[in-house]
Amino acid sequence: TIPYLEDCQPRNMKRVGVVVVALLAVVFAQPIRTTIGDTRTLLLSDGSVSKFSREEVDRLIEAGNSTFMDITNHETPSLNARMATPIPTKPTHQAEVNSLCSELDAAEITTTIGNLSSYFNRYYSTSDSVDAVMWLMSQYKAASVDRSDVTFELFEHKWAQPSLIVTVAGTNQTDETVVLGGHIDSIAIGKGLAPERRAPGADDDASGSATVLQVFRALMKAGVRPQRNVEFHAYAAEEVGLLGSQDIANAYAAQGRNVVSMVQFDMVGYPPDNNLPIGLVEDFVDPDLTGFIAKLIDAYTTIGYEKSLCGYACSDHASWTRSNFRSAFPFETPFEKDNPNIHTANDTLEFISEERLANFACLGVGYIVEMTNSS
Image (cartoon, rainbow, N blue to C red):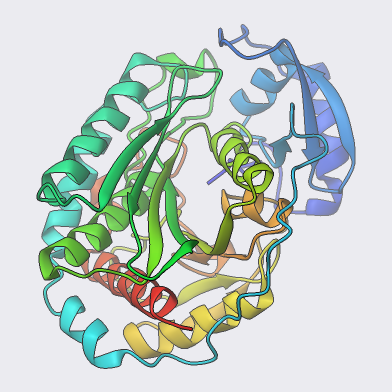
């Protein structure tokens, strides 16, 4: 999840545009070396668009302020023109979903999180970030049991870390695609260069990436063959302005791809005692899809939900919304009650609940089964 002024000011979004500019005058740090351009175009939380140098953007990130989308190269986004496919109004595959959920292994999700968080960090410009993507792809390949309808793509960007796209081909409605995603990068805010800071990112967002993988494992283990195409995404460079997901969403829109729906899993493990409801985000999302996800939460989880707001484009779902695709974002808690350890070296497994991971995995299974078998 994009850093949210955690070290700088309270969560008052009306002031963010002003704070962004003010921080540039007072925060000093060395620029981070990247392969992307020196001038960036940022869409700020107040809706304004401004140009910043790469060094200025780095200073904002180091100060814990990334309440923006970096829309460089996508100032005018490619727009999806195909939105006719209706969203289901209620779940209708309870028996199949409940059977699949009964086989979910939350301990396996925890193991995946442990492996991903063992990298020093997964910051998008580092070699570790590339290694983490390659390791995650190896887990998908192992789970696919060499099925011929499963393919793997490393979506390359203008920086080191690629995004990962795993596709299960549909059996019938092959021109339609359902997406479940999370982001694979991590970040720790503070002084100094981001690549040099320990950022385990267990909750943000190894938890989402691991849970998406577990949904895939459940489908493969049961031999599920969806009618629509299903894609499982692990996005690069979410923490620095949703860069990876914007590249993919814009490419899909330009290609005329019919993505029926996209759901983002970004932070799905907190709190460790599992005593809070899911925060169902209502801004920067599609209301019809979000309403359906609410019904899936009621049907396939035991923790319920509360309506919540990000207040800005806080994760990769916003990239899809901006390109006119339907997206939804069920978050681990109501937004103001999320994990306080994210974007630090303390974002570790001890603050994650296996029970909560299992609930989100079952929600993911329900989403895939219901969306890929609806007419």
